[in-house]
Amino acid sequence: MPTESSRPRTTESLSVAALILALAACGDASDRADAPRNPAEDIPLEAVVEEVFTAGAMAGEDWETFGRITALDYDAGGRLHILDAQAMRVVVVDENGALLHTLGSQGEGPGEVSSPTDALVLNDGRVVIYDMGFPQGNFEIFGADGEFVSTASLDMMAGLLPGTDLLPLADGRLLSESQRFRIRMAGDDSPDLPLEGEDDHLRDLHAFALDGSAPELFYRAWNAPPVETQSVSTGGTDFSLRPAFTPPLAVSALSDGRVAVLDSIGYRIKLVGPDGSVAGTIERPLAPAPVTEAIRENARTRMREGMQDVDMREAEGIPPGMEEMFAAALEEMRERSEAMVEKMVFPEVMPVLSTMMVDAEDRIWARRRAEDGDNDGPIDILTADGAYLGTLPPDAIELPDAFGPGGLMAYIELDEEYEFPTVRVMRLVSLEPAN
Image (cartoon, rainbow, N blue to C red; front, top):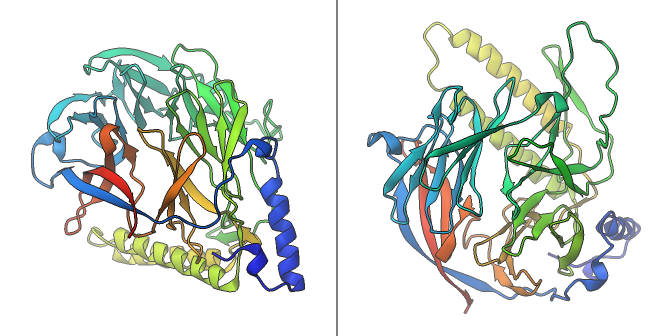
């Protein structure tokens, strides 16, 4: 990726450079003076991995015929917890993939779920299933042995719920990007007034307790300045288009109680203390790249290809006699999709990083954007103290859906031939300098 100083100094590039500096400093510059000084040049690394096991079968035992896997998490002993949202349960397997037990079942009673979206392991070994039900959301809590412990209900009238991804904090609370909503009574046409503390520009991370107490604001993630958006109208419905290359938001826990937060356009990972204050930052001198016409066209192409994949999946299994209705709906979807592609809104620069995770050894894995704008660029490996260790090439390894102890990495995949869900587990043996 070219640096700012290597680009031609035209009037356009000067204005982009000024915007890069402004955006990179916005909202999160208070701790930059203490940021470690890391090199701009990559140090190549090589990942040595080995296969451990694959769980999941099209025709097998009941527990391994997964319907829809939506979450994975490890406990300290290397036991993998697999949330099958379709079967409405968590399957727990050991380090070799053998079944230990299952948690939860379909229903509305204690330990039962109706719309599970996430499952995670707390530091003390308890397992929590988040059930985003209505009219009441619940945290169903189980012991490490699989026995049901208790239910913690969420106050729907408070207008605040967790998102679909939850992160366990050291104090036992769960951190999530909060979702705000309003409950209206029939005939209520009053204007939408902001909820207390609400700011559409920022992204709030709330800590949700398991004792029934109200959630607390933990951290307000930075967001790019609002831009004028476009909308697409089809079938009498208006669809607002989200701008491309919006700043990422990723959070991951460190063993000392801090939380690593990625919410910047520049190369900046914030280290947030247990009290929600920024205790430091990790940076590399890599500037956001300008969004060129080639990058815009690549983004449009990726969106079209994604829509085509949806078309192909939706076309399977059409009931007899429904072909014409399906064809009309599919054509409307294609027209709307093409209009969305043509009206995509682009910023002048794209964020350096696309996502970030912390492994069980407290190493930070920071995925950079590729030069063509794709999310799957090289991966930087950094320590919790902010030291840069090196960079894995884009095709070396994928970020897993869950890191485990001893180098374990778990991935949600689909069988190549029959497309039933599986969980593939690998072990990272070592990270070595590339030859």
